Image 1 (cartoon, rainbow, N blue to C red):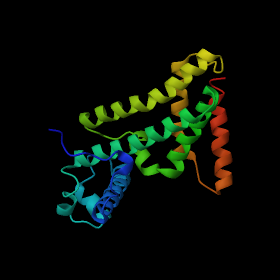
Image 2 (image 1 turned 180 degrees about the horizontal axis):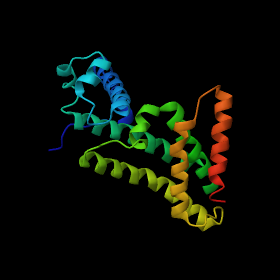
Image 3 (image 1 turned 90 degrees about the vertical axis):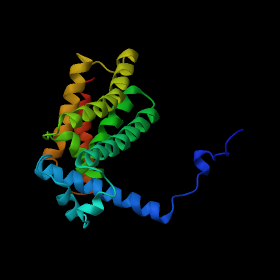
Image 4 (image 1 turned 30 degrees about the vertical axis):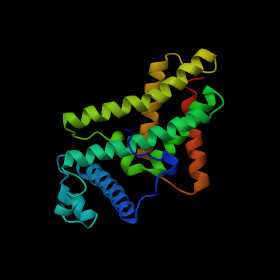
Length: 208
């Protein structure tokens, strides 16, 4: 006998008010946790510190996350999945590999300096993560890297990109992008865009 029919994803019922509030609370906790760990390091960050910053008791925080490892695992997953989906959409929308690489670099810069700086910093700054966390970081980094690698490989194959060595060029690109949040100081929207566009074009020179 067949089970009850299920609705396709686009016909699923919207989240209840309680579920929406829980989701919003989790997002707030994740963002605060990223801020706290960037300030104090993993081993010096406690669940009490995170709970205090979001105005919860430690006991209440356990309703959302079972442990500190569980909390930061969720942080990694949240920022990685959102960033990877966003970059994949950018790459797929571009008409050529050169356009795709330009758009990817600029999008990554926007994420780092404007849209999600605290969460993105989990992958930018060296932290004293335990080995289980480092392995999780490597997993998400590989998925992130594959988007850029595929675009560069397509660009080389089509003759649009001419890096001296694709792998070295990608390392130089990521090093340049990752350093921008350290020196970048936001001003007006138009000035910020001009600076980030200049950085993007400078990085693209490595591949042209």
